[in-house]
Image 1 (cartoon, rainbow, N blue to C red):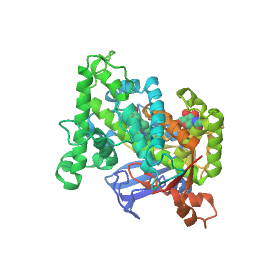
Image 2: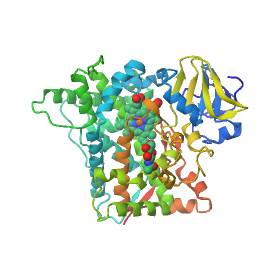
Image 3: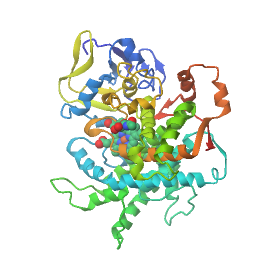
Image 4: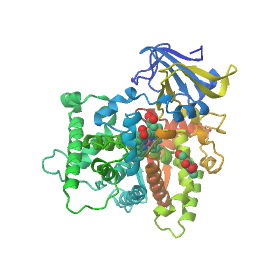
Length: 492
Ligand code: HEM
Ligand SMILES: *[C@@H]1O[C@H](CO)[C@@H](O)[C@H](O)[C@H]1NC(C)=O
């Protein structure tokens, strides 16, 4: 590693273990969030080395935009080390845990299913989900609605949108009590349990889910979801009258039937299901938590909430519902979401590995060196938060200033919540449509406020960033999760 500054530890932080931080032994489980850019600033470089004995890895933690750009764009020199994501493959072969030719086989049909039609569907269904929320028992007719934890609404909202736009199944605020014949739970229950316990479904082997009593329900939900999907495949294949549908499931189902041409392989049924499952893993919490962070930030920054409200009022002048055609005009809501993703990127890292001995160029040289020497099989972790708070590229990085994204010269290479390049997030447009629609609907009808307890508890802190850090204070799990945050929604 050429004595490049960094961390020397006994246990590699790349293996995600829920461990505390102990000097020379571990970096703790939150290393890819702690201090954001501060560890880099202290070391005087935007790339930190990580040397570990167990397992013995040579790895780098990268917050340098030039190095990151090279890592995501030079696909022959740097690949996705799928053995580090291996556990995600127990959903069946899928786009996330594949590389090379195998990845292309998934990416092409998956890309096709995230179509313009699907984007429109995500938009329309998100508006319906918001209307359903406002009409629900807890909300309708109330001037003030208190939510004990913001994710109590954002997780169901994201689930309902993926339910219909992803699986082609309508799940909603109303209880779905009919258990289909031959099943032990409803579709909604199965999918809710699987998504709520993604950490367990991802980390615990299937046989253990079956045996350990506390995990049995998760195991059953997982098998039930699987069974529902096999049924959906069968029903759609057998249907005499084929409905025109634009959900992701239908898009992928086509890829299992049609000859993909050009030497491409067809997707199998289990790969279809594998991909649909990983959409939940990759898309559900990330979307829900981003919305939760955005609502929390807007409750803290009331002036920003007025800005977004005024923008929405001007864009939808007669108070009408936003249409899909309005989406490109709703720039302020997108700027709020981008600024939220900059400050709280839900997927804190992604990995790459060098296939050959090579070098990596740097924007910020270290001791006069403009590149680092990289042996084959070196691992890299993107320091997404490190880059997003890097003061060389972001003015006043801790400030919440959505308008920075409205400046046409915002630093695009320094914003990578969705990764970048060929393997960047395929669900970005899905997310943007959903989140803009939901945020616009909520902001146009409600004012979001902190509860008096939360406000008073931190009122002694004069600095708004310090206050925000106490209030939002996320924990690190598979994604960045907002701390229990109660909010008030006050009818406008
Ligand atoms: C705020 C929301 C989201 C964030 C921050 C996010 C972030 C990311 C990141 C960082 C990656 C790259 C992972 C890696 O290289 O290891 C990724 C990939 C991916 N995301 Fe997202 N994502 C979001 C929403 C979604 C949604 C809504 C879906 C699906 C409905 C989705 C599906 C995927 C898939 C399938 C991949 C793998 C693409 C490939 O390997 O070719 N994501 N996402
Ligand atoms: C938000 O970020 C995306 C990249 O994720 C970019 O394409 C878009 O232009 C940005 N827009 C605004 C208004 O911030």
